Amino acid sequence: MNSKNVKIAQPYAEAFLELANKESLDTVINDLTCLNNTLANSQDFKRLLANPLISIDAKKGIIKSIFTDKIANKTLNFLLVLCDRGRIGYLESIITKAIELAYRAASIEMVKVTAASSFTSAQQEALVNKLKKLTGATQIKLEINIDTNLIGGFIIQVGSRVIDTSIQGQLRQLSSYLGAPTL
Image 1: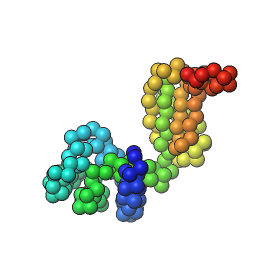
Image 2: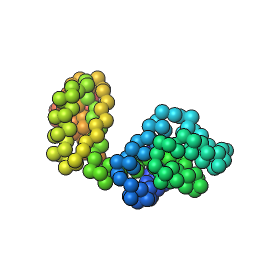
Image 3: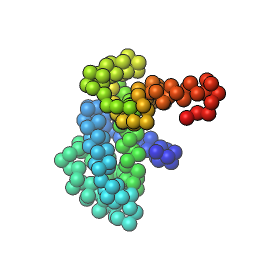
Image 4: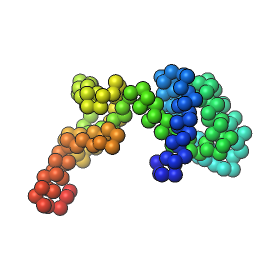
């Protein structure tokens, strides 16, 4: 997200969560996840929302036809307000920020894990338990990516904190101690 999108997304995401505060956080998170998945799976829909040549009424009609039975009325109304204000093109940034804020309110921590190979369910569970102790969060949502260039180990990103236990990271650290050029 670039800085302009953050400046626009932050107040709308906060307003949405304040508006939806009377709903349960589970409902809000489910609605946001539904919207996020729709945007992630349809480039055409994203282009349609960002297209200034398509009228506001047409965008509203499409949004209503897609989401009427899938999300709460307050969420749907919020999308329509975004159309009216000309901010629907920023929906992806707003949703990303709102999910981040909703997770924080629900004490859910998003953790990005980059690993050399996939985890077993027992390893995932152990990692989640360690991360709960480390972050103090009641729930951990793992986003796991596989990168075979790491050789072995994994890299964990929690917010702005990065924990690198990969062999590639250890080799990089060793080369910097020895004064060799970094890999």
